[in-house]
Image: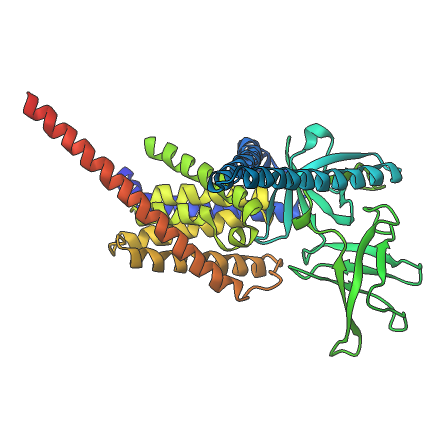
Length: 274
Length: 173
């Protein structure tokens, strides 16, 4: 018997692991949203790696920029040229800091404008593997929980779908499984903005008679009970007739995860019945 | 036990690099799956148990950190680990071109299994057969083969030094 098991160790392990994964998937499909012990355990193990990765990126970027500057300085022979280049390097550093300050100032302005309490977080990693997601460097220890909306200075980014102690995964509005209830900036009609994968989103459930033009701004309507009313979501970029007689309305999100490093998580009160 | 620690270290390093890549080169990070490359490495090294265990760990980490149905990534990578090691036990996967083919096919199996599981579970992928999968196959094959060549070179050098040291010890005796 033991010999039989030893001979078929690989096949038995394969069977056991596949069954375990199927059980996990089945459980994941039927759960209500709270993180499972396995997710928590995996996240706990990965927490330091993700934070370490993000810190390493920052440290290497700093070192790399110093090295680049040093290499550039060595190449210059004339003292005057060296000085000019140093000043130029300093100018670039100032410019980069100015941009960061600008981003943070806009985020701070937004924070004071919004009545909902919020918490600032940094993007630790981005992923396009299956879902369009980002990882934030804050988690349940900071008061975050699944369902909370995440915004950048330019507008809505997405919604938290998973949290561990020190990490939160955000499903971006560009993901096909996400949906944000929106209203036209003039309040003319309502609809739902949903993702299409990468790039632009799509505006759905808009009356055929609704007058729309490229450049029109769509803001959150608050009807989904996730995002507060009035946050910019995206602008209409194209309107095309669809094969079924309706219109295909392409919307470019105002905020992009690729161009921001800091975000605000709105600590909305839990929705009734949630 | 030592090999399990190596596997854990390789997965951790792959995860760190993947996270760093997502900041520095998002386009590359989208096309290269370093965790899959680690699983294929243990598969071509002829260690089915290690390939499957590393596949399960790598897949679950991907599911938790980067989204998707919990267990789908684990299922895909366990299957890839088993299949590559099963092929590796019958055919010698020890040249750059066999590695390239294994990596490309592993990427296809990983993706195809994900699509099939999504359909079965009622969570189909938005764009299951985009051109991106071909780019992923190519990039995983190129990056993985380069990494395998480096690992083999380093390991051969280490073995050479160890045998030289052993010979010199014998001569002294």
